[in-house]
Length: 79
Image (tube, rainbow, N blue to C red):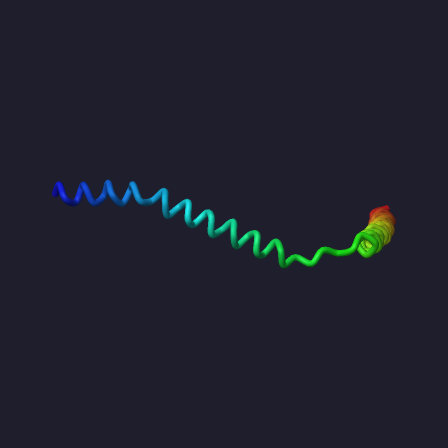
């Protein structure tokens, strides 16, 4: 039994070394993946952002119009 307790203590003492190695490996992998990212050029990013904002505004206006028309139809039916 005493030997089992000693082995458990040894295992606990070893865990931090494994955890550190695991973290180092994870950060190394993260850096490797980070280096693989292809960053968009600022000009292209600006165009795409502008397109998203304009399309979102147009969709917002369309939804508002459809909602207003539907509300007016419901009010007309109720009266």
